[in-house]
Image (cartoon, rainbow, N blue to C red; front, side):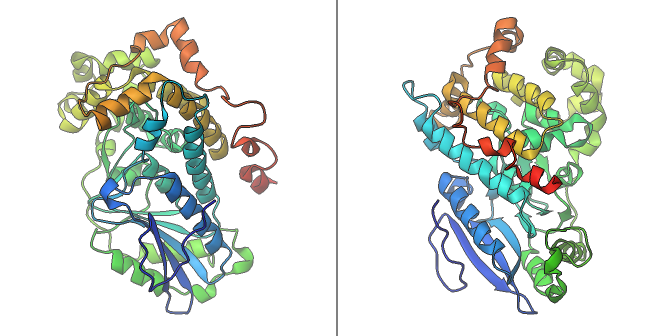
Length: 415
């Protein structure tokens, strides 16, 4: 694993991630991690995942560091997803299965998410701007998430023939009223208010208040942190509680109205209309959507979401629905293990490569998908969908195999 650049306040770093620390008023440190590829909207790469993971490990062992902030460079995005151009280049017709680069990319990404979910110190997300795909995985792994009036988030994998990965199967499952399934199927773009409702954020602040956030954190009484109970995030003197109190004292920003709050009832009814074929039948029919809810059918937000679904990849829709059913009772480690299988299979099958080609390479936005949804739901097609969940590695060689046994961090916490 690549070592992270040492954290300093005065060193100019031209790296994909910048690390520095800010001193608190009582002599502790707050670690700052800045994704630093704004031209690509801070897209995740193997290098970025390695750097973040190494720095998290280093700061975890440093008692002076009491909390960490994760943000993106530039004013457009926190993180707009994974850097899939190199992944696309690796998906040649003669690439071995499993694809070595796909294994490297997804395993480093998913190891980082696992590390974040079980991290002992507060991880504070400055969630300003665009957050999609891999950025959503980072968001889900943080303990304290701030959104602004500029926050826009989505899981738009249906447009590129992948599936809502990056732990999407896990956090979409936890959004109320099955609205997470709707977001996974349609790639609908949501706002900060939606993030609060969807359990993806806790605090609403103005986009110009970053300095105020840092000032509040630096003024907190970090000398009262009970290090003996650092693994307990519930007691009043934990670092997590101190961060929560500091952020709760900030002025609450006015955010755009939540579309999920407005339309949760028709979305819930739509997602419970039957199986995937029934949901598809309603999403493909303007008349059915009007009968479901006239306001829902007439809103430009839902119209864009439905249009994205109709133009999107049927295999993605089938995988999204199947995963949603499979992961309800799984741990975050089990979900990431399963997503690794599905992602590596997608890298070997035609739709992911075709979707990236149409959207990012040739930019003709006219993908030729390998199957219709009816094909996916046939007996033969269902076998094809199910094949994505199988372990593609020789016995004992799955990169995340330890996560299902005694080494699972969730199991250790229970014990």
